[in-house]
Length: 599
Image (cartoon, rainbow, N blue to C red; front, side, top):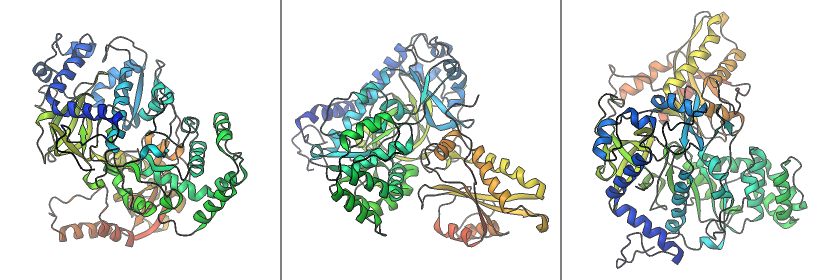
C-alpha cells in the first residue's frame, strides 16, 4: 500500500479506523526507544527490588542502568537452575519475582535433556496479548479484505504437567490457548478461525488435527489465509490430508463424524457444524485422489491470500515444499517470540522469507545485546560483566546475541538467539534472525546441539562393543524432504572382524538408543506429536570421511584446521555421502516419553 507522506506515521494510513490506535502505539514506541527502555528497566527493578536475586547483588533499590549493568551478571539457564528448581518445588518466597510465579513456560530449548522451565507471572499474559493485537493492523496495510473471511490455522496444545510444588508447566502457546484472553476473546472480524476452540484445546493430536482439517474443508470458500505456528506444522497438516482425505470426505458426504473422534466436546461442537454435503465431498475426492498435489492449498482453498507461518531460522528448509503446495503464495512471518519473552513484530510482513526483519518493541522487556564473536562465542565472566549494547545503540550489519531482563524476574538472561541488525524503523532497530546458538539439528520445535548428538552416539556405540566395532567418524542432517522429517546420521564404522559384524537388528537398536538419549522435546515430537519420523543411521564405506576432507581441502579449507562437520546441508557433500552408503537402518520403535519430567 502506498504511504501518504503527509501523515506522521511511516507505516502508512490505517486500513481501518479501528487500526489507528495500534499503529500509533507502534509509532510512539519505536520513536522513543531509549526512554521506553529506561522506563521498562526502572519498572522491572523497582517491582523486584525485594527479591532474593537482586538483593544478592547489592542493588539496594537502585533502578538506573549504570548500577544494573555494573552489578548484575549475564547468566544462562544453568546459572538460574537452582533458583528455578526451588520455585518449582514450592518455595513461594520472592526469589526472582516479587509477583507470584503463576506457572512455568516450558522452552523448546533443553537443559540436561529436559525442557527448560521459564517462570512467568500473570501480568505477562496481557503483555503478550498486546503484541498479538498489533499484528492484524499491520497486516491490513498490505492485504485488504481480511475481515471478509476466515483463517484456517492449525493450532495445538501440548501435554501439561505440574512441578512438585504444584505449578503448571506447559509450552507458551498451550498456556495462551488455555487462557481466558484466548478462550473468551471478543469477536474480531479480522481474527475469525475456522477451527473451534474445542478442537484447538483437545490434547489428542489426531482428534485435534482431524476436527480442524474437517472444519477447514467445510468452510473452504471462506478461508482467506492458511497457517500454523511453524512451517513444519502446516506441512504436517497437508500430510494428514493426504493420509485421511477418504475418511474426511465420507464425513462430509454423510454429515456424520468419524467414530475415531471420541472427545465429547469436539463431537458436540461438530454436530452443530457438520451437515451432509455430497457435492463438496466429491470435490475433495477429485482433488485429493489426483497424483499431483502441486498447488493443493489454492486448489482446495481458492481464496487464500497468504500462508501465515514461521519460515525463518531452521524453518527456512521448508520453504520450497510450501511453495510447491501453495503455488508460491507469500509467507509472512508476523512476530518474534519465545518462552522467555515476546520480543516484537515484522512491520513489512509481505517481504520475502530471506528478507524478514523483526522490530523489537521496547515495552516488552529490557533488551541488551552481546556483540557476537564467532571466534570466542562464550567469552563471558561472572566476575566482570561485559559491556553489553543497549537496544538503541546497536549497529547496522553487526550480529549480536540477545540478552533479556523481564518483568517475571529473568535478569540479563542469554536467550541464545543470534540476530543481525538490518536497519531501523524510527529509532527502533530491526533484526534478522540468524540462528539459534549451538543448534545442530532441528525438524520442528526440537533443538539438538553437538554435545547432545555426541552423547547419543556414544550411548548407541555401546551396543557395538561386543562386535569389536566402533564409530570412526560421523555427521548428520535433518531430512525434511518427507513428512514428517527425521534425523539422518552417517556412520563410518571400524569392524575388526568382518565375520562378527553387527547385524541389521543391532544397528536398528542403535537408532533407538540414540533416540532414547535425545532430549524430551525430541522424544515428545516422536511419541505424542508424530512430527518427527524414526531416526535413521546410514553406514558409509570406509574412507568416506577422508574423501570428505579431500573435497573440503579442494575448495580451500586448511588441512591443519579441518574439522569434520557434525551437520551437513551442502548438496555436493550430501551427494558424496549418499553415494557411499552401504546400508540404512531405522529406529524400530518409539523412544520412551511421558509428560512427567525426569526426577
